[in-house]
Image (tube, rainbow, N blue to C red; front, side):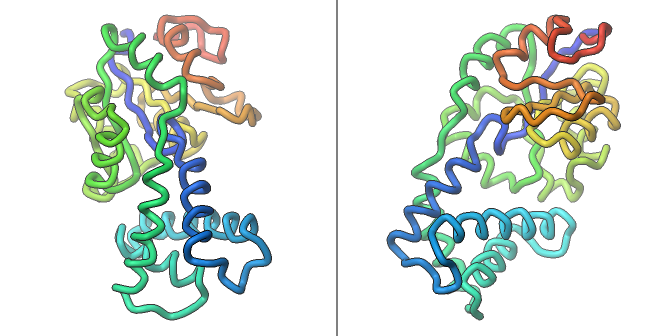
Length: 239
């Protein structure tokens, strides 16, 4: 049976999270000052990225909540104890710079336009619904997706099969009728395949090394792939 819908990851798939986070934090540190623990702004930016990954993993594992992981990131980054209100205020000032840097990848709108008439579209994210709703609305594309399922409210997260199945249920489609596109080879593409969907790894950096996965290096390759073009690692029966 052909693919009838595309489910999308958001961060670093359609939204340039890494770019916005780095630009936003650089501007934030220009206003706040560089913490003494870091020899340079670049060292601080790398540390912030590593902390973001680790504390986000704690949240998806149920060890903390969305706001809690933000506060914990700030405390560890600044290497000091802070009341919740102080940590949230610091993060809020950072968020203002971060949101000002929000941008879609250049290939997103063209591919959504190309796929609009032939495929339905939905979102499956490991983040918070309110945050992702705000993000997609600000970026002007929320109305492109008829359904959005987020792990924080769902109670389970990618790569668990239940997360993918919940998103398919939101579209009233069977998993084999749905493709999932994401930038993480294991959490996104491999998790989708294990759940019975067609998983597509968006390898924007050209990292490679995953012959087991259907892979594209840009979204401009997606329409041809969905239509059955096998040049990008799709099995002959794709679609």
